[in-house]
Length: 116
Length: 228
Image (cartoon, rainbow over all chains, first blue to last red; front, top):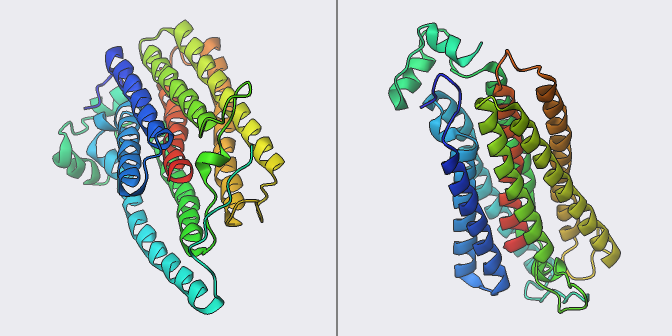
C-alpha cells in the first residue's frame, strides 16, 4: 500500500530485482545463443519477457504498491490490445494465403545468410 | 496536492477492490497520488498504445509477407578483433546497459525519498550517461545496417518490410531514450539546485516512471523483433 511518505521501500528489494532482471536477460540471450528453435523458443522468450516486464512494472515502477484505482487505469486499457493482436494475426494469415494462392508467391523460401 | 495532504483530507484507506470502489465513488479526487504522477501514468498508457501499434503492425506485415524474414541473429551478429561473429551480441550489450540504467534510476528514486540530494543527483546523472551510451550503440547499429544496404524498402536477405520495421521501431524507441536523457539532465540540475527541497522529491519518481517505461518497451522489442 502507498505510504504517506510516497513510494519508499528498502533498498534490498531493488538490488534483488536488478539482479533478477540481469539473469532473465541472460537467459533470453542464451535462447538465441544456443539456437533453441520451435515451440521451445517461443515459450522461453515469451516467459522471460513476461517476467521481466512484470518485475519492472511491479517493483521498479511501484505498481505493486499503488491503489487499485491507479492499477486498473494502467493495466486495464492495454488489455483490449489482445483483441487487436488476435484480429491482425487472422488478417495477416489471410493476406499471406491470398498472396500464395493468387499471386503465386512461394512461402517456403529460406532467407539469405548474412555476409559479415 | 501532496500525498500526505490527500490522506489528511479524509481519503479512503482501504486497499484492493474495496479501495477501488471507494476511490471512484462520490465525485471526488480519484487518484491518491500527486497529480504529476497520475498525468505521467496516463501519458505512459497512451504511449503504450503507440508502441503497441508499431509492434502489431510489425506482426501483421511479418505474417502477411510470403517472403522469408531475415535472420536477426545473423544480421545483428558482431565480431571482435577478427573472431567469428557472435550472434546478437550488440543487442545483448544494449539490453544490459538499459537494465543497468533502470537499476541506477530506481536507486535515484529511493535516495530522493531519503532526501539524500547528492546521491540522487549522482545516480540520475549516471542513468543519463547509460542512456546516452545506449543511444550511441544504437547509432552504431544503424550505421552498420545502412552499410549492409538495409533500406526501408529493401535489404539483401529477404522480406522488404524488415528495414522499415527496424528503422521505425528502434528509431522511435531511440527517440524516447534521447528525450529521457534530456529530461533526466534537466530534473537532475533542478534537484541539485534545490528546487525540490521544500516541495518533496516526487518528481524524481515521476522521471523514473518514464525511464523505466523506456526500458519496459525495450523488453518487448528485444523479444519480438530480435529474438523471435
